Image (cartoon, rainbow, N blue to C red; front, side, top):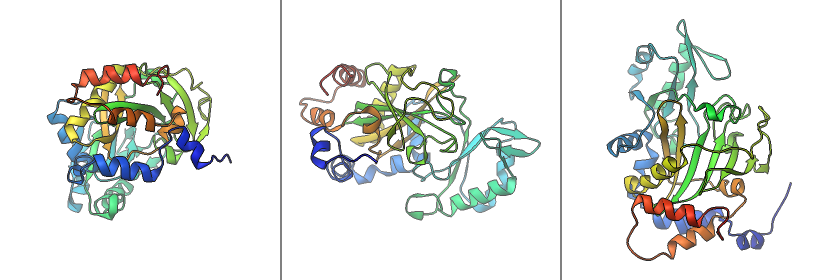
Amino acid sequence: MNFAWPWELRRKGVMNMNQRNISYIGRYNPRKFYKRVDDKLVTKQLALANDIAVPDLIGVVDEQHKIEDIPQMVANRDGFVIKPAKGSGGKGILVITKVHNGCYYKPNGHEVTPAEIYRHVSNTLSGLFSLGGKPDVAIVEGLIEFDPVFNGISYEGVPDIRLIIFKGFPVMGMLRCSTAESDGKANLHQGAVGIGLDIATGKSLHAVQFDEPVKLHPDTQFPLDQVQVPNWDTLLHTASSAYEMCELGYLGTDMVLDKKRGPLLLELNARPGLAIQIANGKGIIPRLKHIEAMQGPLMPVADRVAYAKKHFSTDSKF
């Protein structure tokens, strides 16, 4: 295992947990707006009101007696996703990619019986997966058909694009790719691969799994230094505009690329993790300090994106 001295990390501009919580989340994220990102149903409604594309909303299960409505709700669907509205870290997300003769199948081919789905949703309503264990609702969404440009980059799951937005500026990006170990989910702590992305171009920089550098996808052996995320400018604009939508200064935006619909906003995060720095091989503090030092009125979204592409590329000093 490799270790680094704290002063060495500070010299490289690496942000730690306390610094993130106190200097950025606590300072720039008003608590009264947390519900806009902590409740995925509220986020989805806000996004739709602001003309930001999101995955299809099939239905919402908010009471135990409505659980048995799910088969009717997903009739004629090839697949669907059930997620807790107030979940975090990918907990409680159930992805069904095949429906056949009343049976449901996960991306790895394992069958999920209707009784197991009912139990999963019942647990969701009781708060098993929610922040603080509070009672929750289950969101049933349409399945995302991921863009074939990502073939080989992700295993049994949809890769998503995480962008950190500070005061409306995209400052750091990462592509999160699922693996067999992460059970088709894109959460790094569950074993997904994180690929740092150049803010200017959307090209890959470095890749990590469990905080260790990797050069090939562990399941597909795809070379991770040859990734170019398409629709990069659209992704930057969508993420940047989330700042006005939720009014949080320090924010993580998670998006996916659908084969037919293009970039879709999955969710927002008021407490984005710090591993994005490892994936980029760079500390985030110099970029945050640079934005904090800026004077003048807030720029429009297009100007913020152009500014970030110019100042936060791999060729810049940040």
